[in-house]
Amino acid sequence: MKRKAFLFLLVLILPVVTTGCWSRRELSNLAIVGAIGIDKAGKQYEVTVQVMDPGIVAAKKPSSERPPSVIYHAIGETVPQAIRRMTTVTPRYLYFAHLRMLILGERLAKEGIRNTLDFLSRNNELRTDFYIAVSRGATAREVLGVLTPLEQLPANTMFKSLEVSKETWAPTVHVQLDELMNDLTSDGKQPVLTGIRILGDPEQAANQQSLLRTEVPAGLQYTGLAVFKEDKLQGWLNEKDSKGYNYTKNKVDRTIGVTPCPEGGKISSEVINSETEVKGKVIKGRPIINIHVRIEQNVQDVECKMDLTKKESIADLDQRSNQTVRNIVQDAIKNVQTKYKVDIFGFGEVIRRADPRAWRKLEQNWDRTFTNDLQVHVTTDVKTRRLGTVTNSFLQTEQ
Image (cartoon, rainbow, N blue to C red):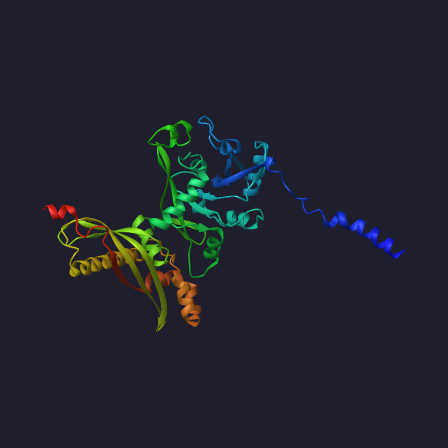
């Protein structure tokens, strides 16, 4: 009798515990979103999504008449409302789990991005490994409408271009959602994001036929870093100051530096390794930051009369490179102190870790202290490792 009762209960329980696919969604019913753009439209939000066209992407021979992605957009009082409103025009459920890029409109960034990020952080469908950028001189909707060569999906182009630029050039940063939210909640660090703009003719940027030309008339370009105070955009760093920021934050992987020669001309060197050490201390109530940048470089291009076979020439190149890098870092810090007056370098966090007791007194007015009272000392150590396949320029041997 007990055995029969046990089997009866087992039959009742099994259907409950074996329903692991109750929330599944069929791929044929999903519209995979590669990029999302958020703009401010009056007091409302305009949300734009870039959706992959699976028929074009999966085709062995993609059509030149249909683009590989489709743009949908809608306006709502909140971001979630605008996204749900898109269901009136999208034939499939918008699926954000494979999001690659989030583009924030410049106007939205100036008014504040905190409310927008709240939605993104609460959405359990979103992963946090997408990159975030700010549109510059255009709306996020216009940026997402640009078609790009080489990669079928513009979202992948933006994602991969940002990674390549960060790894080989230096004035850009790839920031993900977790890092941005940490910067927004930190007392000693203000956020920065990479800017993106439309390069070329905006009217042809969304024209599929323009991709059939050898020289594409319009495209996207990452340019400058957006400086924030709390969640509001304050302005932009130029290319040189953006590189100085990355040197300070130990975010330079590789880049190209140009050093003037003693008698005119210049030498290009590739930075192959860069390490930055930042230390802080407080002396008599005044915070001090010491920055030391160590760089290894290889000579890439010589456009001057300089005998690189001599040790003294290499020593002179190292000395000049030291001065160049030191100026880049110092100018970036000075320009941020005088123009924006916010600590985007995280010096406050360095002081907090070095002297928590002193930080409790400094944190209330840290932006003012960063601007007026903070002493920053920069030292560099640049070493040239390789000269390439030749020592001196062949042009020099002919003279």
